[in-house]
Length: 87
Image 1 (cartoon, rainbow, N blue to C red):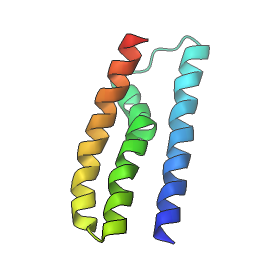
Image 2: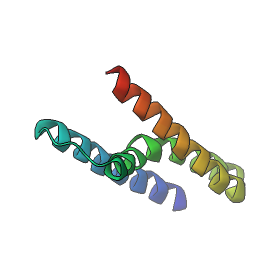
Image 3: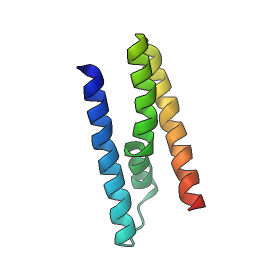
Image 4: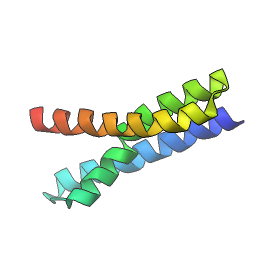
C-alpha cells in the first residue's frame, strides 16, 4: 500500500534525523550548514512533507502533492531553525 509505505519511509527519515541531532548534542559536535539542513529535512521537514503527500494521495491530487511537498519541506526548515534558536 502506497500510503503505508509513505508513512514508514517518513518514520525512518524522522528517526535518522533525530539520531543525528542527538549525536551532535551528546558529542558537542557542530554540523555544517549542509548537514544541519539535511537533518532538518529528515526530521521536521519529513513530517511536514508527509502531510502534503498523504493529503494529496487521499484526494487523488498527486501532482499538487509534489508541489506542496517542497513548500512543506521549506516550512519544516523554518519551523526547526526557529525552534532551535528559541531553545
